Length: 585
Image (cartoon, rainbow, N blue to C red; front, side, top):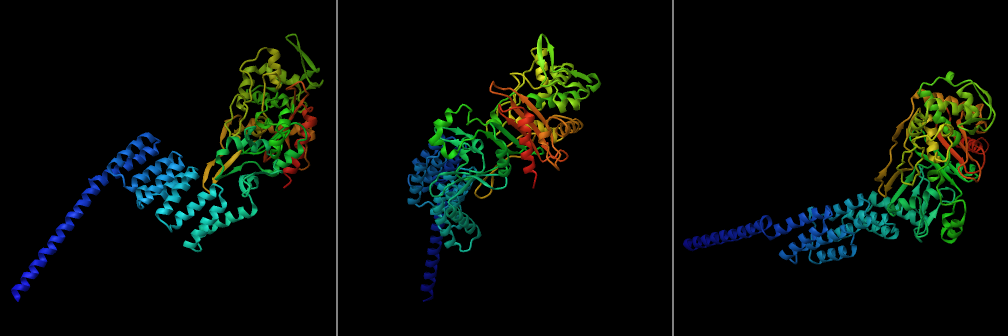
């Protein structure tokens, strides 16, 4: 009995050792396959193909994946990798087809090929359709993943598929009841559905100025914003404004403007002629308002395009940024700046007699009025005397006028999200008569935009520093991440602080006692300069540049009344209306 028992124990021990040996062989086989065999080769090829896709080398990636198929035609990861590549190429149909094949063949979640991470990468880049494909695939591989469900909903939400997003958020809450993120986005989507509006563009205070109907998909323009040239339009008939230049941000993002809708309405209401108003924050360069008259109604473009197009006074021209006009006497600020910083003494110029005209090289150079005895720069600015500034220019020489015009932004392209014409002054003066014109802001080759005119006022208001003007404050996606953000940036250091302070005093006096008196506002000290020019043969262009309050500037502004009269008569009163209402709060 003992010998039989011993023999059985020995046989059992041999059997156990045999099983252990077989298990070791199987394990060794799979370890070998994992590190050195076919599977390892396939994984290596797939990793390499992914890197090629990320580098945009799709042909090379396709070659890699075909090599992997030759090794194993049923490996689900290969079809998964094909889906990833096609999604990167924005071929959604093929991407979905390959992902379906991968699922049929039993693809499992692998960290190095994680589709949730792929989806987040696409989302960060603003590629919401591609992100959605990745999250939909991820949620089929890993059903019930609350994060995956949330992000699938967010992608649908970003693509303005509001009802689909609501259903996905609700599905997520059935998996994770009370989840705060799912609840937050569900409530947002429900509000948008109930109000039938998605915010596309908002002002600096979050007030919507462009929305889209959830039910109809139609754009909803704010009737009160007066931002026709800024928001613009995009169709086969007309491409204009942000809808043209930044339309690729929709759907999915919200653009926040620097514009203050309240200031925009005030400025638009005050300007009742053809022309423009630009209001800046002098400390940052942010464009707080930009009005261009005449206006068009975006809701009526399709029906009335032909009528708008036939109007002689180009209704689609953004006069605030693209209109180029003769500046006239507002550019006496440039001549005065050059005089102060060149160390030219008033005693070398004043007193002088203005008889209303002067013959230069056989041509009559006119002043707008016979001023008689002009005793100082302050008087010359108050009365905007051309004869005085002609003399200052003749002593300074044209090179100084050109230098300071460039400092103030002439001949300098402005990089902005909307088209901006470049204000210009020629590098050389043709004659002494031409120098007289340039010293007073005149001449057919001396041109300025209302934007740069506002920048001139802003520079003096900001102690001599010209901040780069900008109109977009930020672009955010639905989760609040910043896709684009603009920060205040110094464009040029134009003047010494002492020079700016002196100009400030001159400009205050020009409003208190000079030609800018119609811009005076009770209780607010206004610094300004009038200008009158003739860009076309239609009539006089009235200018006024200013900032207020002069001792602590909050706004800097340029007003152009196109072919409407003298600056002191038509533009200065517009400034008064705007300042009185804008700074009343």
